[in-house]
Length: 339
Ligand SMILES: NC(=O)c1ccc[n+]([C@@H]2O[C@H](COP(=O)([O-])OP(=O)(O)OC[C@H]3O[C@@H](n4cnc5c(N)ncnc54)[C@H](OP(=O)(O)O)[C@@H]3O)[C@@H](O)[C@H]2O)c1
Image 1 (cartoon, helix red, strand yellow):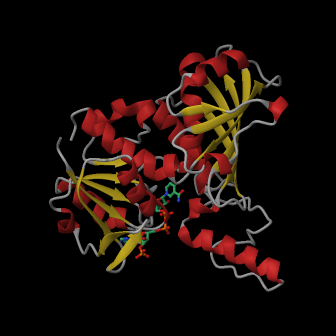
Image 2 (cartoon, protein in one colour; image 1 turned 135 degrees about the vertical axis):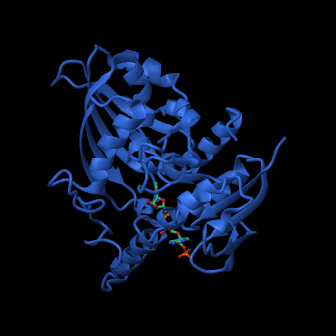
């Protein structure tokens, strides 16, 4: 079997899990290197990972895949190094938001739209974690009854902000218990024992909404290939370490009962149904952490609209929402003979 030279750009919350999952999934690895802002050796589960600095696209010569998990924006690694690496022959799989809506770039969840990989130009985008969590629960239902409108309220874990945010929640909890002043650097408000109704920056395109809320709509339409789907959301950060939760209220074009939805979801790749309200069984972020599958429960009729359903969904934002999906893209490309 062919083996592949792989590098990561960024070895924070997502990059670390990419290393873990490459090992756990027995990805056919020849060489594994990380690039970050300074050289060092990182120990992950007792095994060393060499960390170098990439000073230009030439650093990617000889690598088959590069998983980008650095910071976003003009000075971020995707903007400064991504396309140079891709043009040099290395397939870039980017976790950030810089190129998700770029028409050259497939935005892929392999269970849903792997076909989009066929037109790749060596640069593929991984969707935002809140989009992936919602769409894993929705794609099979969309195929059955066609989504007209989605109302989505999220309860997002601090790991979605990165390693520094996990440290901030833990430090605030410790300070609270000790009766000391709470340290705060990452979030605009205290996160311990609180919720924050802002994820991302204020949107210029949609006044009153945040960048995270805008991403959910536009990425949903691109991945499902349907520009007519209407999405409205409120994205909220909660004091959970890992695992995003979402309340989804969906109006479909065609009738679909909760029983039929449950039957479909029980057969959907990448989904596990946890739905027994009578016995208090429903998805939780604790239960989904470290799981490949997205958990779906509270499957019920929304009686306020024609053809309405309501669901509660939890996904591991670092695994399926980032590292796992990125690796699945590489695995799918190999399986499809694209690499
Ligand atoms: N966390 C999630 O749930 C999630 C989900 C989906 C997508 N994403 C996206 O994935 C990316 C990474 O997120 P994260 O949560 O892992 O962030 P993080 O924990 O803050 O880690 C960022 C990493 O990127 C490195 N880095 C920053 N600028 C760089 C540059 N110019 N060149 C090379 N390396 C650079 C940092 O290096 P040092 O270690 O040297 O400081 C660090 O290792 C972001 O774009 C984020 O939006 C995250």
